[in-house]
Image 1 (tube, each protein chain N blue to C red):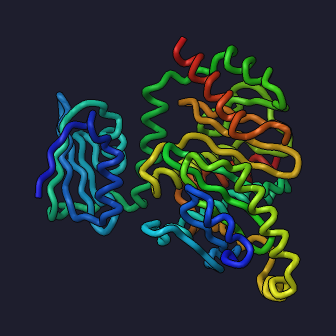
Image 2: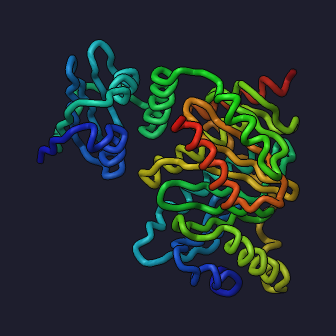
Image 3: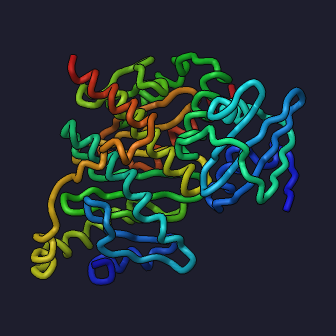
Length: 151
Length: 217
């Protein structure tokens, strides 16, 4: 998928990793620059799945989350079938990445071959906000959110 | 092997992270002017900590509050007890949050910051939250729960601390109608909703400038 539809991303200077992850947090496809630690993919994506799922519960429908830290940034794109993550250095322009992603995804969803394949992927969140995936602090926040919703 | 250094050069949080990520069996001794503390590592976790009179997580929390002192890391030393069961990153994050709350005066972000940000082009709402999701100042879109924002901040911070040995800078969400920016200004969080006409990178620079300017006054 990445090779066929998001290849341009992999040639942007400073992009170090691209991964497409199903909602059940299993990798569908990935690409990474040499020496990039791909073991991180599923661990990182779980955090993003949880963030999007929480906001989806309130119908806020956030499609993107950008996280910036001192040396780099992670761009997360939430789609019904999967999550797209891009790991990039700090200098990479997110607006440019967004454009490439938009074009690539439009082609991907237009492709008959991909439509067939995507039909097999379940749509929607996979309840990644279960207790076993959360630490005590996170569970505390979620309990507070549920409590506040009662009022 | 023994590694000795100063906490000013290498932060205790980083020492913990290195030992956990490398799954070292090790003992780290931390000496401040008055006291000495010990951290034990095994299987990628902190398994035990002592910092008189505390043991376990509270000891980690107290040690992370030290800004000065020496450390000594010794490989191959087994823990004499098992007092910590939570994952190391949760222990450290929670401890750092508590240290922040203790050391920094919990006062609302100044009115000045608030009004500067509100005046920026494209800004729809601004609010200031504490780490518990309590709304200190301003307002938010009714649909967004302040506690959800704090959950988001916690997740992002955990992600950055855990995987990148780095400091969280900022984060933002985007949907069809708006951006939701989140900045940490210890011990508060500033949340800004804007329309989609803002250019995210420029907007972030602008806000950072405002925050820096006010911090230096």
